[in-house]
Image (tube, rainbow, N blue to C red):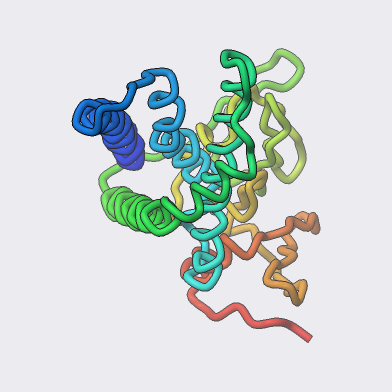
Length: 262
């Protein structure tokens, strides 16, 4: 089933393309009204600032930046905005250097982007992150009717083992594979961590790092690293690092506050 967050990406693509087209038309009309030459190539190049919302929104979604706490979002949104404008300056410089007689100066374009677009780009990213959070929350609230896997078929030495999911301790990214760890075996499956996560009950299998999922029923203890991250010790005595971005979900699911241990 198509993820609700993908609809945000879809509408960002539509809106970005619309603003890009509007920029081209606006530049043409202004050139006609003010009596100066219209250069489509330059208009198309400088209008690319709107198209950059598409890849950067996908990165924000894929890297789970929208899940950051509000405190970190106060830093993330300006960082995304500056990264967006810097990417724009680089794109203009590279393309103009390849296809035009003289490349446009990076610093000048970067300064122009900051002065002209910083506020509007920041607002757009705020709205994008807000929508990603809403759609993700709706996706989570509708999962009660979803049927999750009770068993996984995993490969070990060309043999297919049927493994009850409650016997899985943790799952780790090992591109292009994932490593599934049970109490007595390890399995490598050619699938992405995100694809496998979608098959599992999110109230039991929690992503605690961009490269790790744990079974909450297999947690023995957890210890603060004193920097916002945690070390989770599992029943097999393996330790998995938990990033601060995932701590709120962990806190909610274990139904207790996470406080630094002595």
